[in-house]
Image (cartoon, rainbow, N blue to C red; front, top):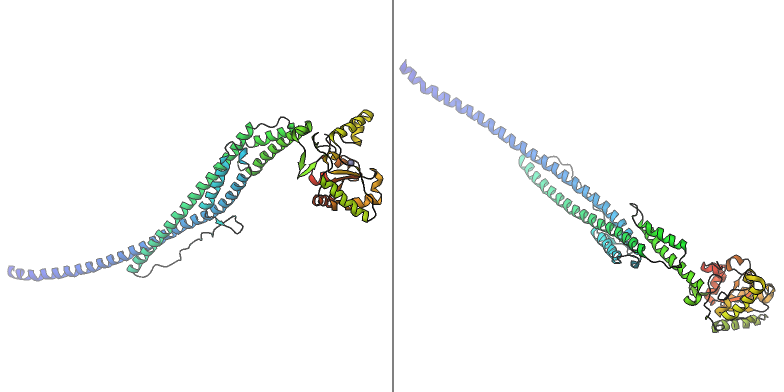
Length: 430
Ligand SMILES: [Zn+2]
């Protein structure tokens, strides 16, 4: 038993070993399959992850691109506004005059940061929009190696999109910084205008209305409402100051024309009820006026008209004598109806002639009608036309001509209005 048993033992051992080997082989092969399957599955996962990461990076890039495109359009509007604001104010009207130049420089930096280009009109123009990019839908390739190498390629793409995003975001930051600099300087400029306006001395003789207007314009600069349009605020301040200065000068001129000299408007010497000449002004008809009259009367004579000067230059002193003696006879209101106060007579300019009878009838005579139709060709206008008493301050005087030169006289004649209407000025003693 023991022998047989001992013989049988090795057989049994071998079988066990063989069975174990088979089992091990089976298990081993199975393990290999699992191992292979697990490698394939991790490659699939890696591909899916790389694809998702690329799509996310592409989305980030496109959001940044859209933001940049929209910021560039904002920057173009902000640039135009800043240029307008800087141009709306004379630096002399700022407490710190350099702020206007600083603002212009900041506006230029903003245009650069936003990559604005020079348009055909010389104004900044938007560059080509940054285009959006897309990631095509692709199924994972077959096979582990193909998946792994595709995932590597997707990861490289993702890196490139992320670098794009970083570059776009740097541009966005640059524009935002430049825009906030522009905004800060705009407010600083307005503050500076307010500070200067607050200490500006207006002429003493400026009208109360002009002074009130200036004070209101300066107050409006103190703390503008958010989003307020700064250009009209600054222009209002500038215009109100100019109006206050002009009203002071006009008052000074009316008070004492000798101190300021005569008034020229658009280069035209003015003497009417609003504007007086200084007492020292004038010493006879000007040579141009005489030459123009001679040319006119010569041509008129050729058509059978006889024109002659009945009254030419009148000095301040002689006008004062005429006016004062009239006042003594009929009072101020009566005298003002008939003749000008000293300094206010156009005859003192040396550019004015009264023709022929110095009577209304002249306007109905052929001589007077020829003058009305032709005087402008020689540089004269009929200064006080019919029906314009409320504008010129004088009744119809068909005989009273004013020399303006051919161009201006023709322009006034063609306008169909008076010199006051042509220049937009008044004529009243106020
Ligand atoms: Zn006259």
